[in-house]
Length: 78
Image (cartoon, rainbow, N blue to C red):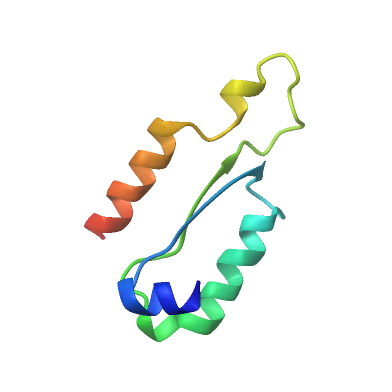
């Protein structure tokens, strides 16, 4: 991951857990710590909503193609 971020200068973390205190938050922190001077845009995170896991509408909870695509475009334009 560090090699890739140093080459591209960008990072988008996508995961299904909640945004706060999820695995992606830790991964984004590690990227920030190890690649700070190489980043050309903020580390973006696309994750589940900060709510308890909803079994009824679980597919709306997960980050879908629209949210991931929007994060990729915003990161590339930054």
